Length: 279
Ligand SMILES: *[C@@H]1O[C@H](CO)[C@@H](O)[C@H](O)[C@H]1NC(C)=O
Ligand SMILES: *[C@@H]1O[C@H](CO)[C@@H](O)[C@H](O)[C@H]1NC(C)=O
Ligand SMILES: *[C@@H]1O[C@H](CO)[C@@H](O)[C@H](O)[C@H]1NC(C)=O
Image 1 (tube, rainbow, N blue to C red):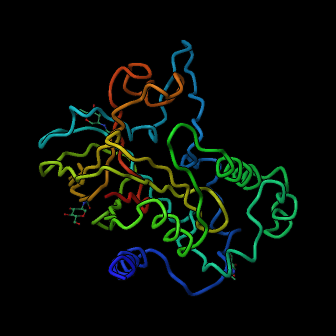
Image 2: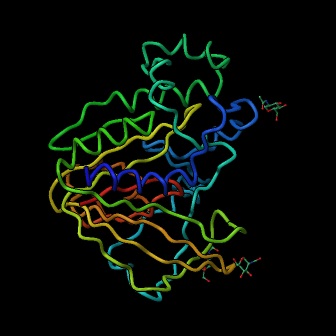
């Protein structure tokens, strides 16, 4: 019962960015920036400059080293906050259950949402559905949720009787700049976390979270306070993956930070509205 009431409290926080007024999102007007959507978990292929060196997309500036986590550190960070191209609310379970969520139903879904099958939206939906259908490997949990109720059920199932806490990334100023230098203005606060589930928003006509996590001390969770060059304040969740030995050698994090699978921990900030549950 305590867990249930805690969850309700956590949801009040989530409700700040989830509004419940209309059933489906106005896709056509809001879904214009999908070509630039970097929220999918699938690793983007880096572009190359004339000399054949990878030229890094600013949006890849979310990775950093565990040794960067100290007060006074300044680094460029990209905080995706494309509320115009991302749906901002979760459906209720009955709404979500009324729409199939399977790559085998893609033709039906494209018709349902009125997207041509060559549109960027169609490609994004296919990528999201495929990502959600990947099976977890080696002690990991992976799941996608399309409603608040299913996020809570899955989270409760993972944490059992332990009450998880939740952190999210919030822009505290109205003049947000996507990419700029930020300084750590407070000592990064490490959270005690022996079980962690991070949930990332995915490109889809309604809000879909891809959640993944595991038990054990493989992930460290931090709450960080940042101050932008334009004086903007951000309170962010950051996670450090302490063991990258099972990662793909092509993972963008290694292009950004150097190194290779297993060589050193990889940290990253969570984009706005992403959520990390931990206990
Ligand atoms: C959806 O957005 C378009 C373009 O901004 C607008 O013309 C239309 O009225 C909107 N539809 C709804 C149902 O809000
Ligand atoms: C951004 O907003 C903060 C307050 O939230 C203000 O102090 C700062 O001057 C603003 N920066 C610009 C460039 O407008
Ligand atoms: C961050 O600061 C460095 C050093 O002043 C500068 O070279 C770089 O262009 C800045 N990056 C951004 C994204 O503003």
